[in-house]
Each structure stands twice: as structure tokens, then as C-alpha cells.
Image (cartoon, rainbow, N blue to C red):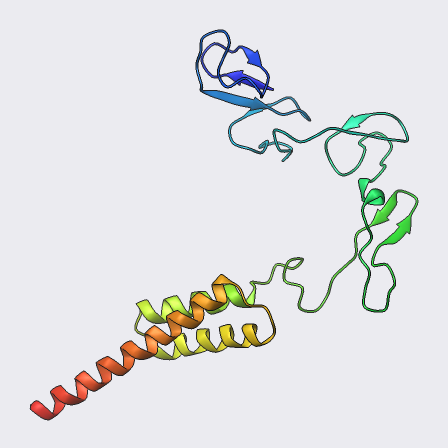
Length: 184
């Protein structure tokens, strides 16, 4: 549902402009909490404007989150359970449905640690722009280490190439400095 920013008329998502005044400036109305917002996600509850409703099989309530607000039924029950290396499920069964697995080790998506590819890219860029050659070397080393682990992505490649450019610039300025030193 949309609401016109000028006249306040409510209209469906499929209608491109306000049927009352013709304006294309509008806000979305959250299907979960009813608040109006700009962008794709509600500022209050985080639900996407076009989120499909879910119906609880236990109590029949319509909801938009991962769990029914009335009875606590979790939609995690209907999802495919991830399987660990030993073939067992990573989810544990509870009275409210399945509970999510806990991760440890090098799973950077579930922790607050900065991923190594981001660290490598930041070190390489900072080393290049501050002319701190060792910092770029460390960034390039971390990027190559991540690529060897099989975690290659755009950030690791960028960190590696920026480190190479930093090395080349350092060598260029080193040679120019030596040549200028002999000319004095």
C-alpha cells in the first residue's frame, strides 16, 4: 500500500501514480505495523514494503516476521535444515519450532569481527594513499591468504592489485630517489 506525499490518498503498489492528484511522490505503508516510510524497508519494524504475508498454521494469525506474534510459531520449521559435515542437522528441535544454529570459528557472517577480505582491502588502500609501503604488503598478504583459502571475491582481488600497485610505486620512487642522489 502507498500513501501520496501531497494529498494523502492511499493506493495500491501496482498503481504508478496517485489516482487523486497524479503525483509520483509517495511513501509506503508498512503491512506489519501500519507506519508510513520512504525506501524499501520500514524504519520501525524492518519489514520490506512488498513482503508477502504468512499465515500461522496454529492460530491462523497473519504476520510478516519469522515468528507468529500470538503463539510463537516459527517459520524456521518449514525451511530445509542445513546439514553439517557428519550428516546431522544443525538445527535443534524445541517446542516453538527449530532454533537457529550457533556458529564458531571462522564464520564471519555471524560475528562482529571484520572479515579478512575487508581488512586486506583497507590496509592496501591506506598503505597506497599514505605511502606506507609495509601496510600495503600486509594487506596484499592477507588478500592472497584469503584467496588460498578459497575465499576469493572482489575485495580480495582489489586488495591484491592495490598492493601490487603500491609495490610498483614504491620501487619507482626508490629508483628515482637513487638516481637523484647520484646527480647531487
